[in-house]
Length: 343
Image 1 (cartoon, helix red, strand yellow):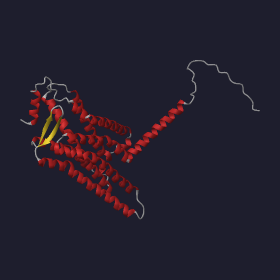
Image 2 (spheres, rainbow, N blue to C red):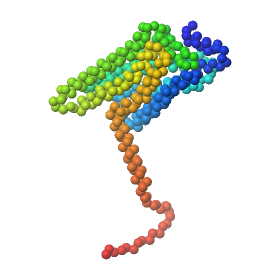
Image 3 (tube, rainbow, N blue to C red):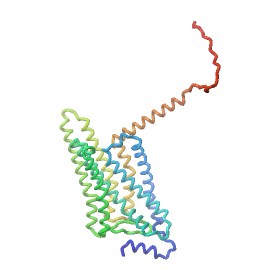
Image 4 (cartoon, rainbow, N blue to C red):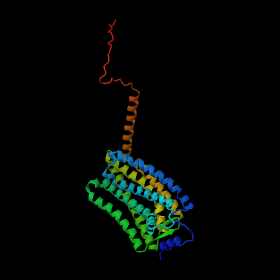
């Protein structure tokens, strides 16, 4: 009998009249309050960002597909948290159905890890596309549309297959903490090393290499053109490298602890603290991306100008005395003023 079945039978055979196995106890609820506040702030920042996308066609570009794919994973992480929070706070069933219990536990235990792994590979592909644009002056979003579509599918599907196979081969198992959480634990050291390598070490290492190659190309190009002048394209390429380097530094600092500890322990007390850092990073993502990308700055400036014009026009019309109108089909007698002669 596996640990999940043992734990399930435990709350079914307990002497308590109504055990409510999915309901968080007071301590578990209290531990998640900082995450609830952070996720609420994240919902606000992401809402503002996506409203900008809805009203500004200038930021709806194919070259930004990986940025939006990354931000969609943020939204799914927030949806996973609020789903778990609502279920765990309202699940008052004494004996929930086995299917529902399994579903809630697997969503709680696996979705975070799946989406976090997606993020690191999405950023890797984004960085590679920018390097090709910088070094070879090729618009990959126009030239390699099919390849990009295949890359999207490969990232999403292969990551899911890896997680499922680990459960099928019993390299991973679901551990249930009664009225607290459901977490993934690993049965041997080899699978932990494999997960750390594929979910953290390899993509981070490749990203560092691509960033270095991009920075080196920009530096060499600037050195060659220093005798004449630096072109607008080189300035733009330099800004791309700086933007991604700043964003990636903040992202790794807040994202990495949660992923590494998840692979080592599968959960625990420290994981709660590091997950809070992960949600802080999610809340900051729209702000950092909008601040570093000039296209979003231009969109915000355009919105501000439109709002300013509307406010000024509204103010000028409300302060103006409008001419009176006469009703149709109503006779009015107008008296002409006598003309006066100028002296």
